[in-house]
Length: 162
Image (cartoon, rainbow, N blue to C red; front, side):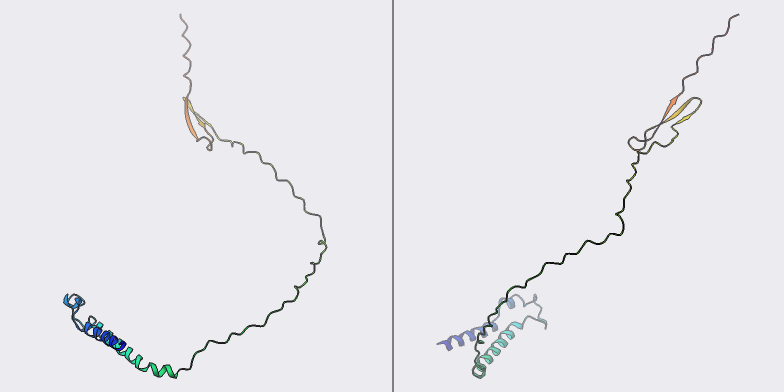
């Protein structure tokens, strides 16, 4: 019974690859191109696989009987390890402090600096009809020159009357 089913399966596979498939009906594998680089490899691959399978089945009794039986390796247990007591460590030696050759250095206190004084900047430029005055410090307030006109001179004294 098994031989019949296997033979029927082999024949179906062989004849199934020889019948036109959907790929052949649409014009071949690459859109109708029947070049020599592919497209017809499927039947050859199936037939080659069947041939190799048949060779393996035919020669199976030969190599199955000639191979020595394989057994699991015997289980080997390692001898039990017996540990001794842990080592005893002594306390580290106490060393005297290193000798001192000079007294420790003394450091002077850093001088306290006063905030920088405003430098001598000319803040006024005087002309006959007025003056320019410089306002600001350049840090918190920007520098700004402001024109301040001078006061008009007093009118001339009245002329004496004769």
